[in-house]
Image (cartoon, rainbow over all chains, first blue to last red; front, side, top):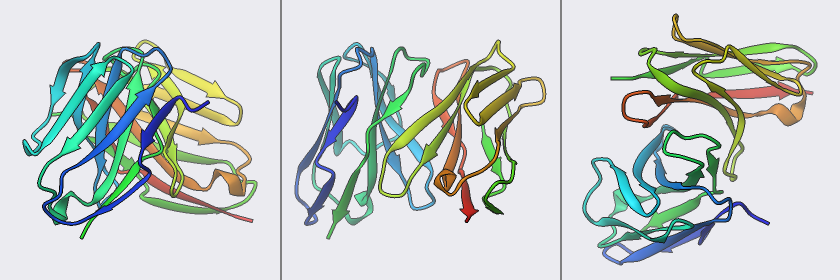
Length: 113
Length: 112
């Protein structure tokens, strides 16, 4: 039973399209995150939600919009996809906003053509 | 601004050896420090979490230490196995803003 599941695992799309990546956690955690892994393998935080409230919003183009319908879900919607958006996106959750018990999903590889 | 550095960037050792991975951070005001492994094509796996008040944590063949005053943590792997081959990442939770700050990782290869 996957603790943090994100779908799809792979996403190939054309420039200019709008796409969404979904994330769900069944750990009962209060905080969820979206990270982007760049070409140097750095993991950069994009957003963090604690009990459905946005607590971290890094410098990310406003084409990226997170949505948290409840504390078990944090979806990432991307408008007008660009080539530079190609990366692996990781969802994660933790018990609290301090990162306790941080658990990652397996990633979504996004390829923009 | 908190920065996390991991040395070396890559390490290759024969199976059975004990090894140490290093992580350093610039600001000692951290909430906790975590070690992760990342396998190609898979997600991240949390290995050990050390709270700021702790000095070390152990799990099986892994031992992580934390010295906040010097801004250092080490991950000790005993009796390495080929299955330990992965990228190991260190991350600190900044004590002021609770952001997770990541190191670039150490790519470990254990040769059979």
